[in-house]
Image 1 (spheres, rainbow, N blue to C red):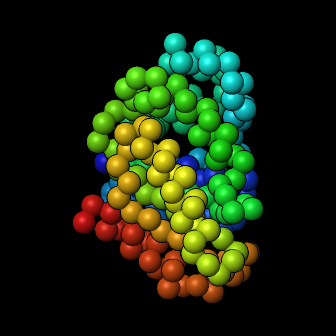
Image 2: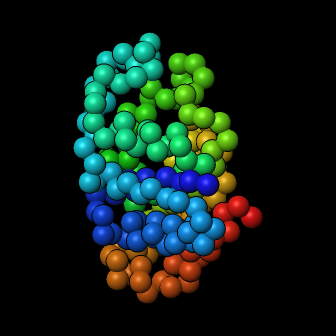
Length: 184
């Protein structure tokens, strides 16, 4: 089996990436090969809103989205993780969602092969889970348009810095176990 992990953070060494790594460590226990992309490190242009992809099912732009799409097609499990920025997914993740329009079911059947499973991850500094649920719902909305079946959710609150996260060893263990028992 293969997985793709898309981290919607601008920080490759931040909390969201760290939690994603814990899930990936759990996946490795089951020999699930995982490709990880941190969107803040990728060359991804904004959607131009030209609607060409509605007819051609391909974006007119050439950038790192092509590389991500290739791994998305090839994966059995899709993990999307985002920190909360002003109560929503990051700008990087929103751009990724927008640029996925050629693949989605809005203009016909999705181009994404059937049978993929989705994991949704959200992290925030505040103490209330409701804001994270909003992010999880946004990720699962994306999954819905690509025919990906959401199977697991993971949220963590009270994390403003990586040091805050490291103090939450129980949640890090939970992230590892989520990856380890993904197929259970």
